[in-house]
Image (tube, rainbow, N blue to C red; front, side, top):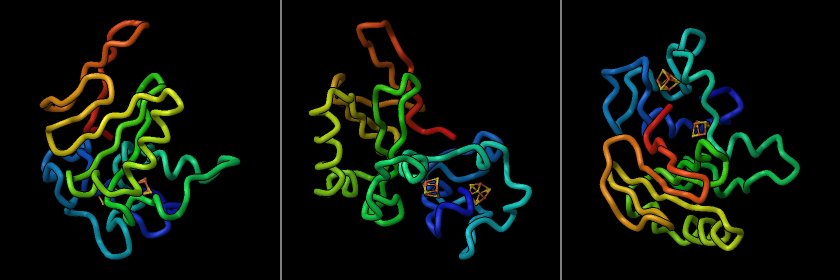
Length: 152
Ligand code: SF4
Ligand code: SF4
């Protein structure tokens, strides 16, 4: 979460933070507050470094729409490590919303692998459904890739 997030702080709920082992899994960080983060200036490095796909896109020529801002849809989009896939984090109902499914479908039509991660379950465009702790293993033409689905 950064000041550029413009009021969104969904990653402070949906994603685990390595430096905060007591943060509830899929629950609000105890430092989250109405203004954002109560320890903003000294927040963990992984919080400082993290930028979801929506936030990254805001400085690109074709930014993702404000309607796809994570706190508006309840879903966070992240790129996979190789940059060829997209992970959507959220609960099952939110992942099923039309705006989310339309976006994922558009990506798939462009050849992008999509993974829907809900709690410890995932649904991947290539792998089908499954269950995972923190990682999905995706086998692609270039080999096996381990994709973190709950990370920061
Ligand atoms: S989910 Fe993205 S836009 Fe929202 S607070 Fe986190 S980094 Fe910022
Ligand atoms: S420390 Fe701050 S930025 Fe990091 S998860 Fe908690 S509330 Fe969010």
